[in-house]
Length: 273
Image (cartoon, rainbow, N blue to C red; front, top):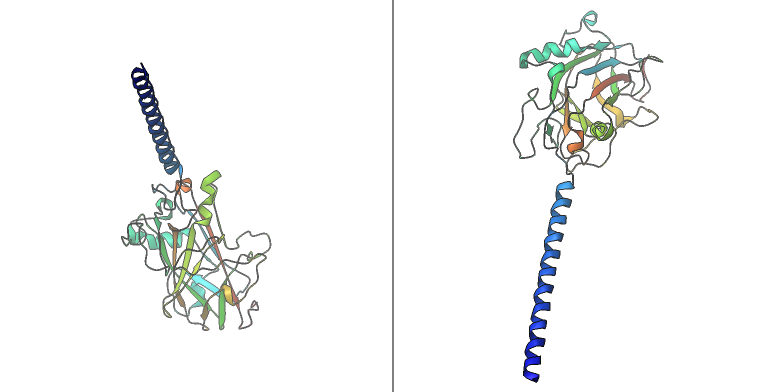
């Protein structure tokens, strides 16, 4: 009798053990599913699709220093061939060589430590103006020696042409303005500076600057120095920084509007007039 009871009790124990194992197995499976769901729901840098609108708004103007002029090509020291603006048409004239235009320019997420050479997430180097980054040249000239600064100040009150990188996209797409970078390379001096509008978390290996609020011209906002009546050849590159934490799937199909405004100062960063 006791033997039968012991066998029955043992069977019950075995049954309970099996049920407990099944319960643990189900729990483990549930945790695994939840883990997979949480991983899928996590957003990382480098958005997975490149479906941007274009950088089809480029406004480039000169600030209050009337001696500072600009052009899309080198006209030597003939000041009459330079002006106070560089238009979309001037940039499109350069993009013709790439069979491209601002209207169809697409920016893939790339990364660059120096603002000159660009790579995809997988380490493939990309060329300019081909579903990659926007590149164009400009030439600045002045009637006297000066430092050229990037400034968010309007060229004239009410003009709304100060340096700014904005977007008409809303929601998560609006974060695109924190992923943008613009580099300025002094071709003769072989120096490059990188402007990071709305600067946030630093990207490893990349040195950038942002414009102060309120705007104050200083050594930190200098781009390069001009010698009187000598054109300065500058290459401008605009890209979406894939290593930026904000460069995730939320910013797909966003668009950028870029305004650049330059101003000339003396060695003490006092604007020339």
